[in-house]
Image (cartoon, rainbow, N blue to C red; front, side):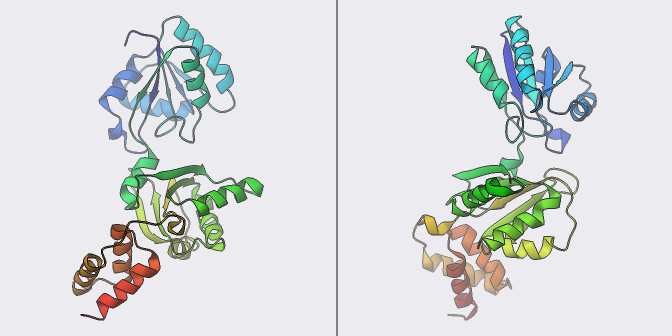
Length: 282
């Protein structure tokens, strides 16, 4: 690592064992490390015994830090940028810095690793060949309305972040817009001790979370609007065979419906009707 380079380093979203050996080597060897919250990142450095100089980089000082980083690179140094958790620039500061460094002709090298977006997608069971990541919901006004419209109209799986105290409100707003029966996966505290992944529908989650205090980081994966894009033809005989096998194994109609929707890409009504048919016998 001799060339002047800005490394964009992904750090654990919870479990510190997820920091890759390449990331550890990079964080230990660069001249300076730019972090969203230096107090948070100092804990990470102490855990691994790193003594790398730590500098803040957040939305309020990113412009000023750009000149500083460019100066270091011009002097032949190497720097790294991290966020509080996960991959920098994904709903976190750093994009302006990366663009400026690349625009000045310096090397930008990503050190890939943990991301709440891909972790949630991988566990959701929803299609991930195409997805729409929309970050945090705006709190109010026309920006929130526009954001909600994008969620409702996306034919692809949607991934969003939400603060724990606002999760119930998010589900309420989706329900009010008719996003009620779509499959929805709530991921909380991913990779941490109290990790929780709940599967269901928007309506089902609203009933659950409206009566509970939510804690920790939340990532939500929502089924796309299937009515906007026709899917592949469903093998009805195969789907019925799966449904009957599940019924014989004692699974509920709701469990059969969820399995058919996920495995065969059926709409909720199609899957439900087939589940009822399987329950009625041959």
